[in-house]
Image (cartoon, rainbow, N blue to C red):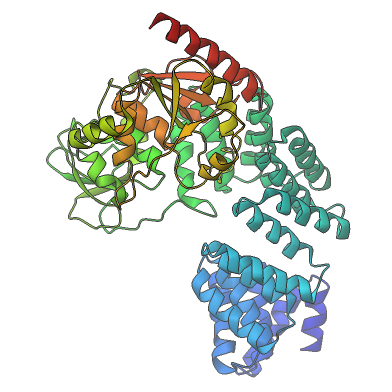
Length: 547
């Protein structure tokens, strides 16, 4: 055993493996040899075998903290994060000063979406070993997911003090800077990561995001392609390159690559049904297709129309959507049978709503766009018309969207960017921003008035918002679900877009191929909301003068 461990420590896995196997042949109950053979299997990325070997060890001796820790690590690698957490809980209960176990416990919690608990676990790891760079980096990643990028940046900076050439720390630092809109600095950080490790595929893909945000599209594409070439199995690289192709209009290349979203470290939603996935190749006529949303509320409103592309082929479509959207979408046309996306109806084939464009070969010139395919409830519209009155020029406003997805950062604008518009004669700003971002209304500059009302307080989403939008004369919104709602309602709206926007808005033009009623306003340069709202104010003033 001593000889085997010596070979193992020197990196001679073949020599160590042979000796562990000899030990187990002589003594099948030798737990240390079985444990270390499991570690070798993990190093060889044969994780199923590793889990079986180390699982047998902890089953025979539940007091072995190191075995529990390694068992948890292997289960994390297999994506079995709930089981991994159980094993790592046992490891730290037996050995409270096991810094690596606390760190890996944090990884399990992070993958389970329990971010605050993950942060506590990383803090425990660092209390035991302040120089554990991986825990500092993981802490930074969680802080960024919690939308605390300044703290994330500090965590990665501390990691770099301990390990100045850590590619992972430089990359994490770049991610925090990118979330803060500091794209030039983010690019420098990703370049530093690649200086330490030129083959670090995640740094290449994140570098591509920074370049994309800076408007350097050719360089961004090259960076994404480099990431894919280095790590063909890295789903995030595939997705980012796919989104780039969608943005630039090459949908034939983009849609297939976007399928990799199902394999990312944080997949939107995993679906596993005994019925087959519909790929577009199977005859769907007379069959029932279960199409379901695995993305956000805005995506649901936008992608609703995709179900009609399958219905046109003779399918009966059952559409699974977020439960709070069912009542809103019951008024959409065409009509489909709507169920909660957690339901499991009877069906012949299934498909995520966002995969239908790939299945039907959708191209930019064939987007199913109508002026209006949603409507608000008439009695709700009447109630809001009475409440808001018909005086002045009523503008519904929403300024903050979800920026937690890499590449989405920077799409929200501060509400104070509307201050000059609020000063236009007769203009009334009416709030339709809920939850995050609404706190900005408590810090308006002197003279800026935004009307606030209680709305959408029930379980159903956007019912009041839709009515308010229909009552108002105009909407001014950022790239958020309310932009899609306004477009689906056929309500005139200005959509304020960052310099390089989400793929669905394209790179040029003031018209949306998805929604004829929207006018797209684009930042003249990265981060330039001042320039955008100056142009928007001029366009609005001209419109008011004509009315």
